[in-house]
Image 1 (cartoon, rainbow, N blue to C red):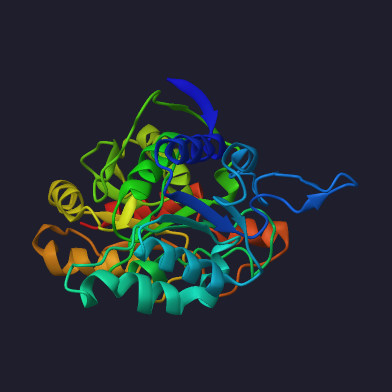
Image 2: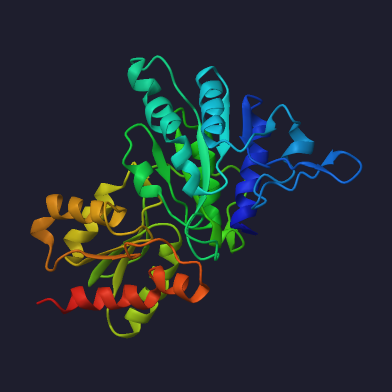
Length: 337
C-alpha cells in the first residue's frame, strides 16, 4: 500500500492507462495549460484541480488536448473519437456545466450501442468535479449525479476515497460503454492508502464499510465520510449500523441494499443532492417497492435543502448533510416501535 491523495490516485491512473494504451487521449479546458511566460511553453499545470498534471510533456499535445470553453464540443469530440476507435477521457471543469453537454451525453453517447444493435461501442469517460464545500457558489457547487444516473446507457461512478478512485477509474477507462465519473472537489487533497500495482473495482459492487443490526445507512461520495463519523457517535450510544458506500449508482448494487434492509429494517439514505428527484428519493422508492416487508420504520432521507448552494461559508456548511443531521435521522428511525 502507498499513501497518496485522491488527486494523486486519479493522476496515477491516467499516466498508467495512457502508457498502456496509445488509443487513449484526454481533452478539456486548460488540462495541459496555456502558453506561459515569454518562452511560449505550456504550463502543464493539469487543469484547475491538477488531476492531469504531467500528461502533456509525457504524451504530447496530440493526446492531451486543450479545448475551447465549450462543454458540448468537449464531449461531442470525445464521443465521436471513441465511436471511431479511440478511447476518450473528457474533463468537464465543474459538474454544473454538464448541462451544456447533455445532448451529446444523453442523446448520442448513451444511445450509440442501443441504436446500432450492439455493433457500435463508445468507450468514453467523462470526468466531472462536483459538490459543495469549497465556497464556490451556486453555479459551481452542485452534485448533478442524480441527473446522470437517470439516463439509460450512462454508467455513473462516485468514488469515496483514493483507493476507490484508482480502482474505479481504471475500470471506467477499460469499459466499452460511456462512464460519467464524479470526483468531489473537497476530497482531492485527502490522503488514503492505495493498493500498489494494477487495481480494478467492478461496477455495481457496493462496499459495506461498517456492520450493525440496528439501522442501515446508505451514502455515496463525500457523504460517506460524514456518515462514518455518525456511525462512530451512534456506536457509543449503543446503536450499531450497516454503512453502505454505493460507489456506483448506475449500475447500483441492489442486492447489498436489500440484504441490509432485511437485516436491520430501518434505513437512512444520505445524499448531497437536493431532495426532489434525488438519489435518496430513488433509493427510498426502490426499498419501499422491493423491501417493504422488512421495514420497521419509514425510510429516512438526509439531503441538502431544495435551494441553490449558498456562497457564504457558514451557510454552505449548514446546507450540506453533516454528521449531526445524519445521526439525528438514524435516532429517529430507530425510535419507531
